[in-house]
Image (cartoon, rainbow, N blue to C red):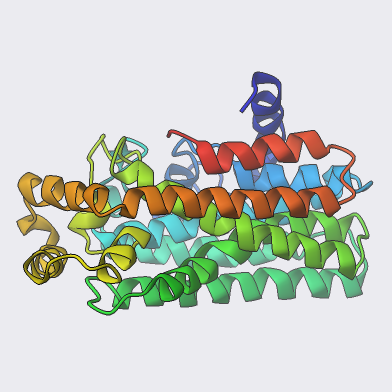
Length: 330
């Protein structure tokens, strides 16, 4: 994204730092606070809290009043990453040891529970009316639930032999659409936005969230995803991707179809570099990669249309963030 917008996102995302420092002080809550600090300090862009604060300000609200929601959303984001690393067996994230590797699985799970409790307690301190607070808690809780449902499908449909494009898009909608939009909805509620605005923000998430996930899947085959530069982690984990759905729905030869299924069904530690290279080549040769890029572009156009309908005073900032989310390279 342009330098001025990137700097703005960084500045707004950093505004939650004092709250995090106070809630997770060094040396407090043996085996808990230290681990939470490690997870929260892993170097992410803090895009989600920035979206919350920028949405609040762009709709005429005071972003300081949205800080509790923004902080809670960043904690929830890191909680999901923590659990995802355990579920996938990832030993690196953002090129350093994941929490479960550093502290053990039992401690990591407990630290996640601790972070969830903290997120709700911080959220409850929002300086809004009881009615607005109740709506914010509902939005936060339903997003937590919906994202968990999407992750359940992601886990249990790995190496699926009957994955369709429609089914894949249902999964990523559950995992990413609400998860991205709710940050902006939280900020909008603090600003006093009405149901028409929040409804359009959910629509924006339905386009931008899946586009984000498809770009994430593309990055996994080209640059890695902050896991020490390892390419093809999704293949090693047998994850349901748009590439897999497209190939299964194509007229690819049966022997290649069977080899693909067998490759994705292998335990991660048994999947070889040759397996990964062959799978990526198949995805490219069958047009799955090109199809994924076209799908992301279609979703990007829908996101742009949603943005046009929203009364943001800082619309250019959101347009640049949307372009970054869809076209990022890291």
